[in-house]
Length: 483
Image (cartoon, rainbow, N blue to C red; front, side):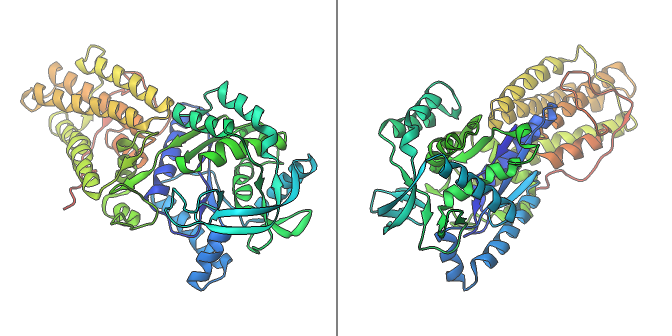
C-alpha cells in the first residue's frame, strides 16, 4: 500500500479535520504493516497559491516564512499524534519543483495544453474555478477572474474516465463514485493550469511568466512522495488516496486525467470520508467553536484523540464532534473499560499468581469470543473501517471484564487449576486486544504488552499466543480520569 493524505494548505494551523484524515491514514498503514504487508505513508503541505499568498500578506510576512512556520507546526502536530509518515512533502522543495516541471512538460509535450482566456468565477478558499457567485463549501462570495491562462484538455479524457469509474470500485464509497460519474457525464470542461497574475508558485517550464495552478502543483506531490524518477517509484505507485469529500473532483477526475496525459498508472483507490462537524458546521480552524486540537492532545493524550477519531466516525458519512462527546467516550471506553481491565488483571496476577502470568487453555470460554472478535476486527481493518474494527475489539474487552467478574478469581485458591485457567484466558484475551488496537492506539498497545511481559516482535492473532511464565507488573492508570 502506498497511502497518501491530502497535501494540507499552510494558510492555517493543523486542526481536528486535518487530524481525522491523518490519523486514519496512519492507522491503516500500521494495520498493513502488522499483517506483514509493505506500506508507505506520505503527507505534506501545499505551500503555493493565492490563498497562501493572501494569508501571508495578512500576517505581514513573506509567503516563504509563513510556509516554513506552518509546515513546522504540521510536523509537530503529527509527532504529537504519533503519525509515522515515511515522507513529508513540501511543495516549495526543489525535489517537488522538479517533479512538477517533469509532469507539466510531459502533459504539454503530449499536446494536452493550450493557451486561452479564462473569464469566470474563482473561489480562493477552494483554489478552484467555479460557476456560482458564492462557494457552496465555504459560503463566501467567489471572485471574478479574467486573464490569459494555459488550459489542460480535460475534455479529451471523458470516455476514459467514465470507463475507469464505471468498471471498478476504485472510488469508495459507491455514493462518491456515482458523484464523480455524474460530473463526468454532465460534460467535462477544460480547466486552467496557470496564473499569470500570481508570483507565488512554480513557473511553467515553457513560459515562466505563468506559475502552475496550485492543484496541478499539489497533486504532483503524490508522485514526489513515491519517488517519481527514482528506482523506488515502481515499488509504490500507483497510490491509494485518502481524501475529504470536498476535494473529490480534483482526485477522481482532474488527477486521473493528468496521469493519463502523462501516461502514468491511475490511482489504485480513492477513499473519501465525510466532514468532521461541530454544531453542524465543518471544522476548518484550530480552536473554532471550542475544538482545540493541541489542548485535547495535551490533556488526554495522543491515543485518546486517535481512538475517538477512529472509533466515533465511520469512513464515509459526516460526523459531529463535541468536546462533551469526546470526554464521555474517553471515560466510558478507555478509562472505565480498557484501563480498568488492564489494572484489574495485573493486580490479580500479582496478588494471586506471584506476578507470573499463566498460559491460556484452549477450552477457555473466552477463546470463541476472541476468535470472533479477531475475525470481525480483521475484516474492519481490511475494509478501511477502523470504527467497525474497534467496536469488535471492545466487545472482547467487555467480555473479558465480565468473565473476571463472574469467575471471582480473588476467591480462588492460589495455584489452583481454576485460578490459572481464568487468569490465563484473560491474559491471552488482553494480548489479542493489545495487538488489534495497535494501529489505533500504538502507545497503549506497547504499554499493555509490556505490562503482561510480551516481548517486542511479530504478533500472532491466533488464540494461544501468550506463552505463560511471563512477568506481569502493575502500573499507573493507562487513562487517568480527567475532571
